[in-house]
Length: 328
Image (cartoon, rainbow, N blue to C red):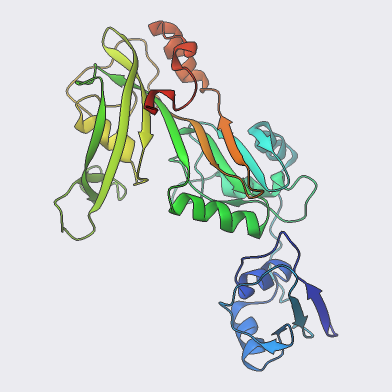
């Protein structure tokens, strides 16, 4: 761009930092270049100088000066037709602000060591009628399936992220565990922390911790037994807090590890014939919608858990309406 341009912030672009808005609009411009243009007063908001961290609101006018040419960079290849079809097959809800997926077991949310395929690289296949790729607003473990929310614009991303941070969301998980918890309903609470290299060199493994211990976080999980069948039980789990591996750790601490969990175990044996995959599913989620309504989502259980339900005689209808087990 070789001339000054003025751009009005749209209703779906508010409540985002100026530098982040700029990088979304002009991805070839670096953060350093944006900072320089701000320091020299070339980027202005409503005619006034601005800072990178200033938050924008709908209706403001951004002065965009002539920008540096894009550097020669390798062009990121978009997802293949096969990947686009796969990503779109996961969609269980979509509107102008939000996309909800039923994430399958085994699909990592973001890339990492030895992760060849992950959801973040598939997001370009979920733009649909919009130009901007959706943004992840929370995470699930690679081996946990279920409801995962994406925001389709900066305003929705800010509102949904805030809802997760302030615990305005309600999440319900289904799990199949070994044995039968005693008592069958209750609350697990206590301090936990990440334990780098504590077992199998896993940097994300967590362990029990003491109050005041460096890195310790307090975690609370409500649980209720939905049904039992011999050596296994179907559980409804409601995380009050959202710590790494919280549900998996709490069930193992209760003496009833989740079936298929290779990291958090108990002394009970897995009944023969059950799938070795982790039996933990983010079944339902309720949260404020960016349009002011309430968003309520339910995700069907994955195939391996469906097979286990059938083998153990669990009837999904016994799960009742989401969250009913935890309502007074």
